[in-house]
Image 1 (cartoon, rainbow, N blue to C red):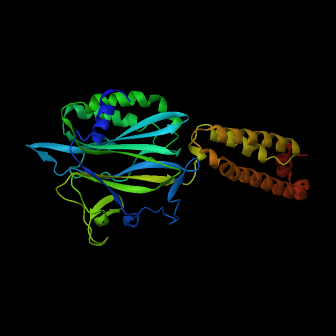
Image 2 (cartoon, one colour; image 1 turned 120 degrees about the vertical axis):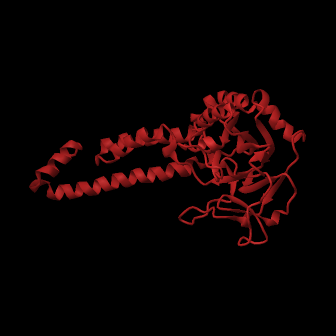
Image 3 (cartoon, one colour; image 1 turned 90 degrees about the horizontal axis):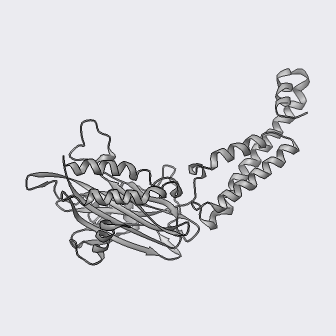
Length: 348
């Protein structure tokens, strides 16, 4: 990572920026994190089996007014991981330019549960850096950061990592230049390295003062303090941010650029119920397995399971086509449309 950003990140380890405290939020204090169907995914990522992602859940400045000037919060997140045999650093900026507001950003705008890194295969180690900044409103640095933020959205976040890494270093240079302006002031931050064969999903709070971790709650993307979930309230008059490392149970192959054209060919040939088409379908299925097995976006220990699921779908398409053909055989003599359908599919 070039220049100033890397140096800024290292300062947190050397205590050269304002002191802060990272607290692990108890897992049973993380509320409202289940998907709509209520299903729970894995609670830990297994090396070479699962994918992980990083989310900035909440951020807040103690006050948006400093010496009669108005400031907005901004978070820089940088996720480091081993990807396709190389150490990759993916930046993301969370702030007001995420909102396409015609008449400006509301003064009380909240940013919750913003995906800032991944999902990417867990290879045994990740490092997460999150820095909360104070950004002066109506300053020309804001325009630069707005442009940077839009570019960050294209750098491997929420989609295949392989699609965005080519421009990641250029984005880091742009972030460095924008954040180097004197009106963009670092407030607090954390650099966290996680490693091991198992990586538990976890949520963290970063605060300027020590707190009791068992009084912290993360409720629907909002950091709160209190003895119980019902009585907990958001912290007041303090700077803070909250972030999480989560686990992805599988890979959405449809998000990978090579998948849809290849799958369409498989379905097309699976839908023709003769032996020649079956042979072509098998060849395309072999190509599908090769693509999955060699994709850096797919954890190696998940390849066989993911392929098997799509193979079952292809077989189901072929079986359905054969069932339809049996209908055709009984009715084709009296229905010219069915006869023509069989001719188009190459079925005698």
